[in-house]
Amino acid sequence: MVLPDISLLQAAIVLAEELHFGRAADRLNMTQPTLSKQIFRLERSVGLRLFEHNHQAAELTPAGQVFIAEAREVVFHAERAIISARAVVDGSTEILNFGKSSYTDPFLVSLLTSIELPLFPSMRIKLWSNYSNVLAQEVAAGTLDVALVTGVPSKGKLSTLEITNDLYYVAMPTGDELAAYKEIRLNQMERRLWVLFGPHTSAHLYNEILAVTSEKEIYPSDILHFTTPDEASGLVREHHGLALLPRTAAWRIARDGITIRPLAEDQLRLVTSLAVRADSKSKLVNEFVKAAGRKLTEAGQRGQSRLPLTG
Image (tube, rainbow, N blue to C red):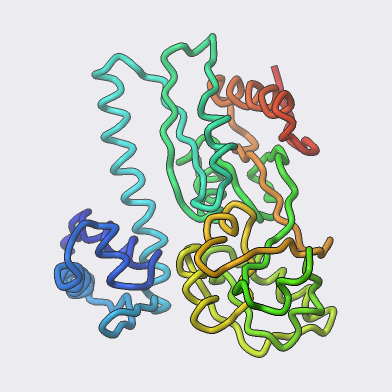
């Protein structure tokens, strides 16, 4: 079996994230026809249909979902191998692989990546971006050292330090009748079109939203899915929908005819935690977590700790 080129895997991963050939091609700095040809080459080389697609839109097939999850691991290890080897040549052997998602508050990322460790003066922090559920899997597997994850349920292989416990925000057109309220209640969203992040981005949060609304017997007229905040913005405008977003993502699209309000619902919260492997023996990771705990406490960001800080 001939393995596909890494560049083809990277193209497929970006398309799986965007589910739109135009946006994916822009991210990859290539034309849309070139991207289409790369996806065709990849599917031909593996003998599988990975995407159902037309001129612009794309959807992962069941086989494609499994393939992309494994492809991310392949690309991750390839990139990590190169970076680790270069670090040895440069004289820096202490690399901390730090995961975050595109929805993570940039302030938290900046705060934690500014940490310096006296015991590891040559430490370098390498950032990796992915969905929170994938980041949690990578920490549990040992391919990431630490990660900021949101909406990830407790798992036996992970220890977590709760950092923030935030409300969802509802994004809507500025002329929407709900814009007259300072905060939104779930019952006010009854029989409206909901715009939710796709279950592939966080099955746990997606199912939690539907479970809470079902328990309260509150139902939408329909549900549309998005992957990125910009995609949610377009769906809100085009379909006059109500999008549920984390605070940082909501603020990012609160412009050009879109306004946001907090969702006053105690059963739906977004908990962001710092996650490490529960059985990690790494002195570097241990020192980083202790320093993170101190820095977050000083910054007033730290919530209830569930992460044993040893040593």
